[in-house]
Length: 391
Length: 155
Image (cartoon, helix red, strand yellow):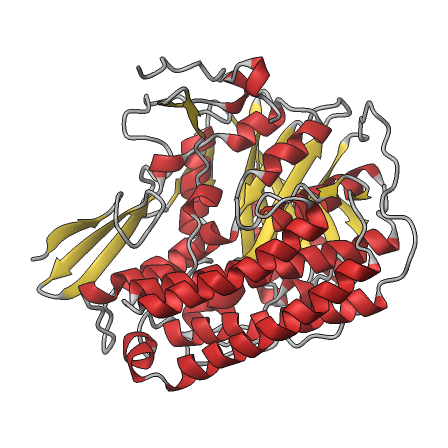
């Protein structure tokens, strides 16, 4: 006999509305399920009602933190469908922005991990260092978080030599700090006590439950879209996919910290080696790709992101499907939360375990909440008054 | 553990060999992209055949309303992306569940069941996950006949 214990939908550790339904026996969690219905936005339906060019802006808003990954995926998907090729330099610039976004996302996650184990000073430090990346992002793209950088056919802005120089020196400083955090994760007894062996997910479970991204790579499944199915210039930029075999929350933290270091190396390399040239291929103003379908995959900070498009020859997609990494990792998270055999899961570890997949429920479910003159309502995007659209 | 997977041509040859006439159409659209259409009875069989070939990763399930039927696509593969497509009629929207093949498919099947009303027979938990509790039964928001309504504003 167990007791049902709801965690959420409002919980201090999780900024997003998720309900984790736990079945507990004493202090142990024996079963779990997740309800993500609080934040469904109907973006896939809305994308069917937008033109391809308008859809890019909506795709950018699927997720705030991985907006670069979503726009890259959307752009290469539509480019593949219409047979457009982005210029070489645009692909290098996309890679730079993608990796910067990964650094920012992983630092944010590191802060949230620290927050969920009660290590508030590391939370503050990680968020302070994330500012370095956000400032660089603003310098390159014009936006700190929602970058609006990628467009169908290329990117909007180029990076000049002075900015590149500034980026290199800021990233070198950031690297020193991240190395410090890596040592801290390796040595600090409190961090280790709260993460080592917590949220165990064996290699076979990770494969069966179709985990992606750092969750899979911390369970010794070497799967990284950048290596297995390169979509930008990843073949020309040297990097090592990070794989750990500890299968726990600590391993997931280490994968992410090592990936920050790899990404900093990739950005620095790309700033030196990117060829000069055009940054954007022209796309006709009335854009109608031929009938057909296409699949694009991107390694977002949280794991493999998949976009599927089906065109019927009109200026709006017939179907647009987005599979976000968190959706792929939810099954793994549920498995991590269940006590099985020797593995016991304590209620106190639930925030750390659920946090260790880097959940982004808004990506997964997608609801729009619009604040209009102090009142809050939920609606589909196309029902917004005309003046507020596109802003 | 490094994953090694076959190329697209090998995948198409293998499926042709295993499924025979049940494979209705195979289209290679890129270096690592292939779209395969099979009949409904062989949807699961084709995924079993691919697993024997070493493709053991289900990326996603996509459902599309095609008017009279609902097209279900299983995207599989890591270094290649293989789309296995089949169509089920709207009067009888049933498919065998893939949960015994891929335990992680449970949540993808739930999504298609909620959004398009395809019943995956054998899924242990076809329960509400993405739609709110008060959502009416039998209304599937991703079907083309569903028109989103403007909700009453809260004042």
